[in-house]
Image (cartoon, rainbow, N blue to C red; front, side):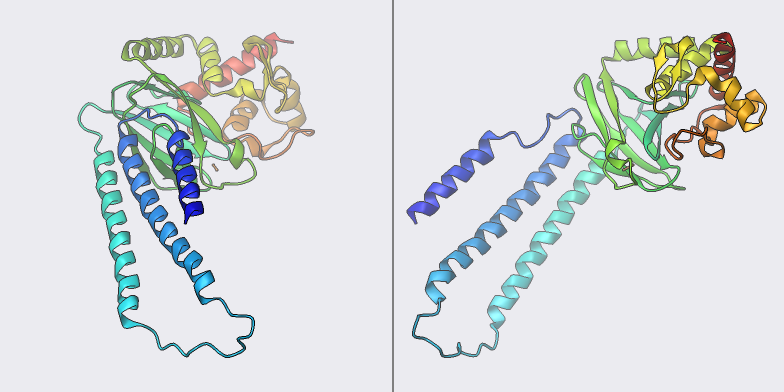
Length: 328
Ligand code: CUA
């Protein structure tokens, strides 16, 4: 009894002192946390009850050293059976009702919300801003205090979008669009994590969500749109930077030094090796990277950038061609 009180007090202190969940950074997170703590409380109550019954049964019903007899036959107990069916039924119903209410509340984007298209593929995220000249980015930029409706799809297998600080998860499915509403409340940089086992690179399928003040966000949008309006060769440099190409590739013109993928300053030589005209080769390598993989580099590592809007794809191709030739 005394020991039980000590263990209980210790567990309570640990429960109260440890910050179990990441800080809240969206309005939707509050509802998700409510559901989380409700389910946790129910689980703790059931766990504690079952433990208590087991621990008190062990000394009470244990076999005495000289007792070789069988236990008494038991024919069940209607009363207890009704209780252990009814109580879980009520709890499970309560959990689904509370979750359903929160999901419906969280799904309301309200008027004046922004749309962002999210494309998931092995093993990258890509974000497109349809209201903003189809600006593309490998990071999710969001303004604080404005609802954003994410429209998610996947190009290959099922992925799942999750920013712990925002709370709710949503699957990204091939050939189908799912939605997720986020209303960021706090400026900061948060991890975007894939939470659906999607292949070998699943654990590395991460990017960042960057929440900015509305003026900073507008400034970022203006700069991006301006950069994309530049002549194709220059606009392509912005597309190159926005889509994270530099994390895997080297290219002098972009001061990129990645070594995971082929050195893009050598594109003309690679095209010759592949036996394809340079422009067609570069374009194909972006939208369908596995069509030709340069010997010495692993297959299926580069994700297809097939959702890149045409003008940005053309700008990127132009930039790559001119800068790789310029590097010669
Ligand atoms: Cu994508 Cu796991």
